[in-house]
Image 1 (cartoon, rainbow, N blue to C red):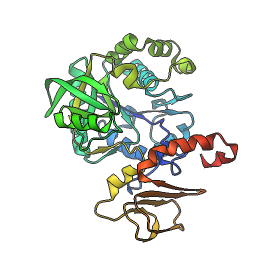
Image 2 (image 1 turned 120 degrees about the horizontal axis):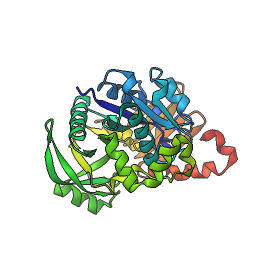
Image 3 (image 1 turned 180 degrees about the vertical axis):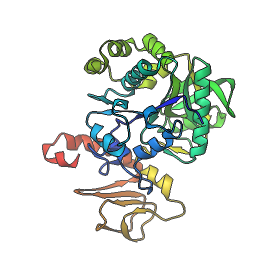
Image 4 (image 1 turned 45 degrees about the horizontal axis):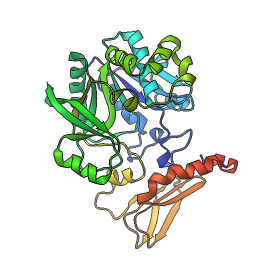
Length: 353
């Protein structure tokens, strides 16, 4: 077990594609979506506590809107380890600010890992082995290590990482220089990527020494790191809104990838629930459901007294939560965000958000 890793949970996301269950003050990371009874945030914290066994080494970065929810779900998290962004500026400012604060406390050689709050991991033992290997690589080299997930289908919804030359073996895992990052490709390109065996899905999980990333940010994203170094969180309103992939990972020469195969899903929308829970069942039913000639559907109700009755439906998602019922074809769940924009523009729908 690795004791030197300082894990950070990024918990500022909105999870809009899980609306109406995920809402403004109760986003996806606060929900239990796998039937375990633990929220995704709580499951992530449990997984990361395995590396030190102490809450003092775990950090969380979230938004001002969600800070109270994080405190409620993680009551043992030290107050000083919860960093609250005054406004969301995407992941680059969040990573930069948190890394600065960790370097001030532990020094530039501290090995830091960043992990989204809303991922599902199947094999936690394999996950720990992978993170241990990433920590070793980051400690020994000037490396920004990203975890690449071995793809099992030609997804057009994930970014891809192409591995270049192998630089060694850490634990029992081979590590490679990153040859290139590719954002969500079309299906033909994704199929080509899979056929080569050289590509991984970009998981959005990173491990590095604090000083390495701070120096790379000074080179590639000075407009983010210098205001934060000078003014800390007060600088947030003037920072550009950029992802860490765009601001740093696609530009640095220090990117390495560890291909991992521990079973992973980023739970991007309602279809992820089917990947997790369907098995050989006709439907995924997280509700009292009475169906006639209904198959391939995902049915969810938040209230114990709710009953959903369907006739002759196929490949749809039905979600009932409080004052909203959503019905959408499974292949159009990505468009939920477009509906939310319409609701946001009309004051009478404020209580639906």
